[in-house]
Image 1 (cartoon, rainbow, N blue to C red):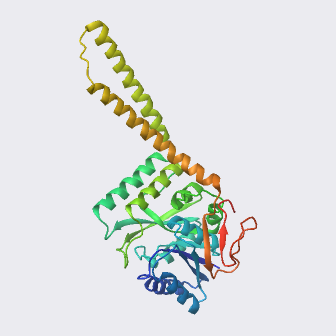
Image 2: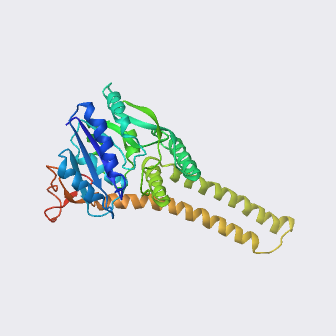
Image 3: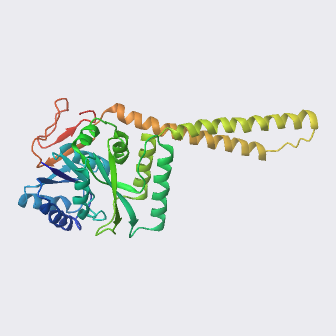
Length: 330
């Protein structure tokens, strides 16, 4: 297999046929052996039915159906796990990322690169609020992490089999694929493109999911929040010490002392707020440690037509059609 195309699916019935035909139109002239891998991430519409219809008529269409919604990054991970191509493309089903860019990505990979990611030049059909928050997030992440995560990029990219093998050795539950690929290293480059509007349907990436992804990216690749909590603790302690000296001076030396509750309440609320923020930051890191310690499967596949996919030997007994993949399985 020369090329695998991994496509996470969540309620994309309006786009599946258009995506399939555009991918076929792009990949057929490339004269490479390829496969299309659809990962159904708990869709509630007719997405799985449409994918099965495509698979029944096209042997190059493979699919895996999750037992429930596990999330976009986990769906991408599952697609990488079952892919067999020497090169793997990751692309969403909403057609905002053009399949027509795949030949150029593949050609660039053949020049000796291990990763070629698509960098957004413009983003059409998105609100000013989303554009602003995305811009701030990418630049904040780039400034506080110890690795170089490209700005203005998503998961649309092509990676070599070497990178896929490295990703399978990274077992964390809170996945941030683009950050992991940057952490791996190797020779990486990019191609620019103009991102189109969503072809149909509604996005599954709500603001709450984007915030969660941002937290996964920050906590997975930076300890800056912990350092900020520590520095704020020192800063608040210093301010509190100065206030204490002033209080003692006013009470015992200058005599300019007016009893009251305003300053006391402000101090208590300020200190309490800083403490709660610090505890919350620490809690985010502990929650991620706890998730990894439990070693639950990253995902469960209830149905698939991908050959050679079986439960790992150490997995708990499951129904015959189910697949459990351990997060520590390499």
